[in-house]
Structures are given as C-alpha cells and as structure tokens.
Amino acid sequence: MNDWPQGWSDDDRGNRYGRGSASAQPESARVMRQVRRGPAAPPGQGYGGVPRQQSYVNGQGHGGYGGDPSYDGAYDSDYNTGQVYGRGGGSGGPGGPGMGEPRPAPNWRRRFKVATITLVTVLLVTTVGTYFWADSKLNRDVDLSKVIDRPEAGEGTNYLIVGSDSREGMSAEEKKKLHTGSADGKRTDSMMLLHVGSNGDTLISLPRDSDVEIPTYVGSESGKTFKGTGRHTKLNAAYSEDGPTLLVRTVEFNTGLHIDHYVEIGFAGFANIVDAVGGVEMDIPRDIKDSKSGADFKKGKQTLNGEEALAFVRTRYALPGSDLDRTQNQQKFLNALANQVATPSTVLNPFKLYPTMGAGLDSLIVDKDMSLWDLASMFWAMKGVNGGDGKSMNMPTAGSSGGNLLWDKAKVKQLVEELKNDQKVTVSDK
Image (cartoon, rainbow, N blue to C red; front, side, top):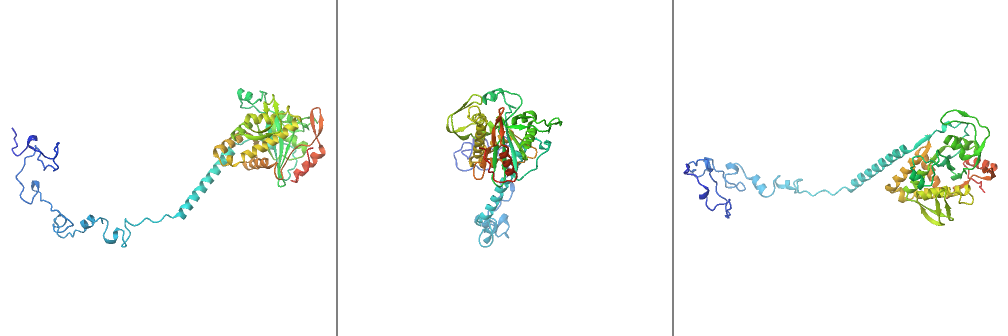
C-alpha cells in the first residue's frame, strides 16, 4: 500500500510528455515520491509558497523587471531590438564607433615594407651562415711561412694550383673505378700558375716533366735545413720529396715569381666536384683511348661525369704531344668546369649549389692565409681566362734533356717580368 495518498505511481501518469509519449506538451511538474505534497498554493503564488515572478515584455505594464515599478524597460527594449551594447549611436551609427563599423582598408605600403625587410633579413642571415659554413670546410694545411728566401711580391695575385694523385680515403673499389692504381704516397699530376691582375688573367701550365733545380730548403716536418747541391730533376719530384712547401720553394727559385696562395685537389675530390655539378660538357677534338687512365672517348661534344673527366685530364700516353697536350686538355676542362658551375641553374639552385660547394671545399687543401674571397677570385679568373683579355698557355720550352723538358730561359724571364708588373702577357709558348 502507498503511504502517500497524494503521490502517484508510474501507472497513473497518463499519456504525458516524456517516457515514450507522443504528446507535444511538456509534462507538468511532478512530485518526487519521497516528498509529501503540501496544501495547495493560494492564488498568485508558485509551488511551495514562493511568490510567482511577474512576466515582463519590454518592461511595460507588468511591474517592470522583477516587479520593480521604477524600471523603465530600457535594457529589455535594447536587447529585443539587437542593441545590446548601448543605445542610439552606440551600435555603429554616426553616434560613435561600434561593432558594426566597417573594417579599415589594408595598408599595402606598410605590408610591402615589412615583407621587404623580412626578405632582406632572411637573405642576409642565409649569406652570413653560408659564408661561415663554407669557411669552416677549408683545409688550411699548408704553411707558406716555412718557405725560405722568397722573391719579393709583385703586382696582382699568383696562385699555384696542383692536382695530386692522392688516393687518401679511397676504397679499393673506387681506385679500380677511377683507374688510379694503388701507389703509396702522392705526387703531383698537374701544376698550374694562375696570375690574377688588372690587365687580364693568365693561366700557365707547368709540365710535370719540367727540368728544375732543387734549391736549399727547410723540411716541412723536421725543420731541418737541406742544402742545395745544384741537383736537377723533374718538377713533380719536388712535391714527392717534401710536399707543398718544397714545391712552392722550387717554383719560386726557378722562376723568380712570388707565389701568394697554394691550392691542391686530389683524384676523388676532382671527380666528386664534377658529379655534384651534374657533369661537364666538352668538345673532344679527337678519338682518345688510354688504358692507363681509363679514357675511351669519341670525337665530338659530350658530357663527362666525374670518372670520365678524371680519365680525360690524366690522359697523356694516347696524345701525340704527351705532357704538353695533356696540360692543354687540363686547361680546357677547368675552364669548362668553371663555366658550368657559374651558370644560373647551379648558382640559383640550392640543391645543386650546396652539394657542389661542399664537394669542392671538402676536397681542397689550401694555405693558411687563403680566404674565401681569395678562392672566389681564383675561381672567377679560371672561368674567364680564355675570354676577353685572359690568356692560357704552357711554360715556354726549348727542347728536352734526358727526358726532362727544358724551359726557354729568355721567354721565361720576359714572362715573369710581365707578371710581376701586372702587364699584359705578350710571350708565346710556341
């Protein structure tokens, strides 16, 4: 039995809203089973004796807000008309700025200024970062201060550029692929003098078989003085005996020309640079086949990869003029390589520029005073040496003796004087 006569059960709720009812009317307030209903509320009061709140519409005729007659209904009037945040001109009209005020036109001049400053800043940061990155990669291992009895420096800048047959860091597979052999140590495979001046740049190949005198020198590692005996040998032997410093000393002694900077690159580094730039196009004047260097080319224009380029510049036995013809091929190739690197497709493409710079800088050995600006100057001179006022040539020779090429002393003396005074070179190698 239900102890609450005023209560109701689930069965006598009828067809009301909720609990699956299809009625559209909400069900009336229910009394919880645990609460006894009190007496019916008198008229004008809500459930439980709480005074019923008067309704209001715009605050008029209903006792104002909450039954306060002093309330004028302004809040409700503005709310119902959408003017919540003020009255009159406060809604964006002429009375003052409001939420409905039109957005001002964009300041394009300011935006352009900000974009320009941002772009310049990015370019500056990138340039500075690239400079320090590249500078850190230079191998400054050659100390020219160890070279004794040096001739006075002349006008312009003189670079001694050396291609060595160093196999350092190469695997057996790489040595086989590049046809380098497996000889210990390293020797000079090519040597060039590059003069950069205001009257045209000059590139002079020094044949490795050139007959030279080894002068008195100080050992680069031992610090011991080795007295000159008047001994004559091939130029590349100087490098084999005591490396770059003796080679510089020998060139300066036999020419009287001051060497300002030294640059060296090995076999693997040379091939990597060519591959990084995507190959170099060459016009080969004749068919070439040389089993020693691995060269196998047909006459005509073709693009050489790193392996093929190394074979081309090392070829000597398949050429009629042997070492002299090889030096001319080396000059042509270096000029083509410089022109290939300086194209917009390389310089403006970071996916080609950075690998090329990385391969080149990692492969170079330079003197301790070499800066990136010096290296860039050398590069641009190499690029333009065969055009405009530039000139490329071999060191003038006058026959041979015992397999060594003899220099033409009169022509060499004139050539050195013109280079020292930064004059236009008029000497011929013929």
